[in-house]
Image 1 (cartoon, rainbow, N blue to C red):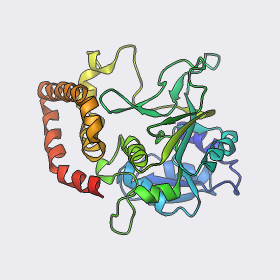
Image 2 (spheres, rainbow, N blue to C red; image 1 turned 60 degrees about the horizontal axis):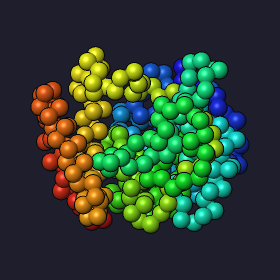
Image 3 (cartoon, helix red, strand yellow; image 1 turned 45 degrees about the vertical axis):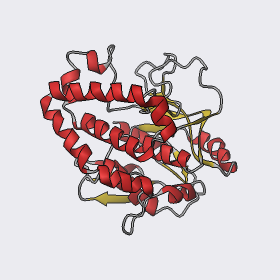
Image 4 (cartoon, rainbow, N blue to C red; image 1 turned 135 degrees about the vertical axis):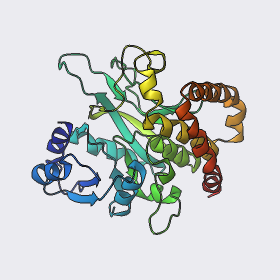
Length: 302
């Protein structure tokens, strides 16, 4: 349902403005046929199995011959008219990534628009969060601002900046960290870009809507919702998020940040550890964390 709407918005993209490349990550739901029918001009790359969000995007990045590239989730409906103004932000040579205001797709058209993302910023525990997520848009994000990262759902990147922070990994530059597989790779990339002296920028330009088929939010936070908490804690998404959060810290945190944020980070990690004890099958995530710590340290050095 969402993919057809996504492709419908992209079919009018002027050829001079860009090429649409669809990476099918081993889908079994008719995605390939849908793309071939609704967007036959797309460069379609079909993978035999799911290799993860990070590596699939890296394959796409490696094919780029343009100055800029945009990541685009299959449940995002893009406002094409926003692209020229967003691309104008790259006139500043230090800008490595840009995103506009992304709205949440809503069921009632006449409702006040709800924000999905106004850029990614650090939390008090140096996790990443989407600014404005689930907030009604009352103009609170109507100023241009530098942010930690742009959302992987609809972020525009300068290819030269991606190449500057990519890890050498065989014949394929590793822009998104492939050890992450999925989740937090956009936060990690933004953090690395900032560490390298680049800027990630948010522009108050409505760039589209995001259906957000994963992670629908209820009236209570998931971790105190008795119906939602067990399912979320035992999901692969939670496992990836815990693991990748720790790896992201190992790779990117500075000694100044360790001093400033060390106590909140420690409290969060204790909370996570207790949760994994209660939901014991999740305890094995710490073995995954430990196994690749040496790799994260090598990547930090790189």
